[in-house]
Length: 173
Image 1 (cartoon, rainbow, N blue to C red):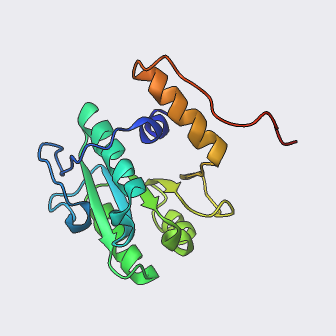
Image 2 (spheres, helix red, strand yellow):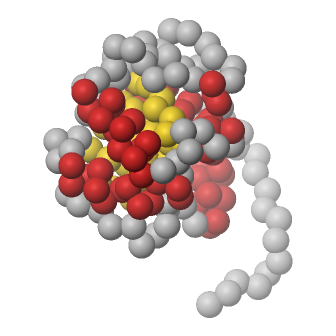
């Protein structure tokens, strides 16, 4: 739960490396860590261009740095199942204990990945709500209401206590 909260509350600072010491501004060109990583973000190259992926990477990097863990990005070029599973194999051989599968393009590989690597924990982030999970996986799907609540909670957590609300009085349901 702590890691999930870190994803939700992460800043968007462009930091990342296998040891969380270097700053990289272009997320789309990050290469897999040569020494492996405790926490691996596996996604497609196209997903790394969005702010959602950058926020997820920032949260992973921040969490890893604060807990003396390493983190790394594994981009499946083309997004095909074979490319994703090859990157998962690299992450597993590199000692990953937690793999974050990011993006709807990885939906088809979520179940086979969990089955193939039962000793690795998986967070399925940004996938369809009907993706099946096993005991070593958890699916994280944000509805628009949750996103708004998390944004408000994070703002207050950061000390911005004068908040306002904009909307109409109609509450559906």
